[in-house]
Length: 421
Image (cartoon, rainbow, N blue to C red):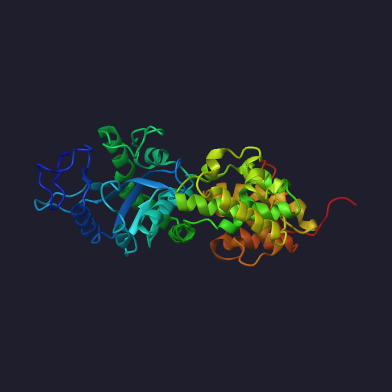
């Protein structure tokens, strides 16, 4: 067992998990009883940290390979306290769906760079945390950029974490001691990072900003892409015209649904170029289908050829949709010259405020504000206070943007005293 470690509740020392780390108690959970005890234990915690290891190269849905959980160690009977407990949950050995009941509980779940973890959790458990704290987002509100976990460890804790092999196979069993140690290190210090970042955010009166951004991240999770919109993500389709566009819409939707049903990457069902080629040729028979360039026999196995032809027919008979085009800004002509200056000013403002620029305002945010889009991020809340209102003054002619003589930009009250004739 690790230093100071104890067997996980309900597990004997003889049958206990291997020692994974030296600075914290680690347990490897591989059965239903261990999972139930882990959930019961964490249900009493107000805060716990989570990380996942997964693969998605050969599947449509991300394949969960390991779940890492960490929480502060409770005070010992002899008065000792401190440290952290870590549990590594093996989803290849035990069904992790009961973990969803824990995720939707009242506890704060701490994750670093949570976007992909949330998608994986939603697929595997049917749930995402009801309350999320993303340490990467939190760091962005403290002038730390959007750091990797290792960078955040070094900056905030003065420690380093083991470098993992990005090509390691997390689905292979048994997991090596090195893999388990690396997985544990990814989550073991997250509770401490949460405490430090929360204290710093509170000191700057920015905790609410970070929590609001984490909630946006939490609500953004989507496990299923809309098959009807799959065609808009295929670059080659943009060159098509007429009924070929409708065929591309149906064929791409067919590919998306089939990939999801077979749990295969979409490229394994039909490559993008082949979607475009089929849509351009509009085959009506299997003989014509097999003449399409790039349509190899492996893509037509089983009922694939028949169902693909049905999709082609549906698309050919449907009204022609508008071809997907690159998004247009439609910023009023008289304001387009201001856009680049505003982008530079916002970047400078973010540096001065010690906030990551992408969290303060993106170029899209600026465009939406200038276009008057309803619900624009810069039109309300803390972003409006920091930049939105000033931009409104600039557009209305109440303020002017000028160089400050030191290479920077300053937004100042307009003098209405033009220079020159």
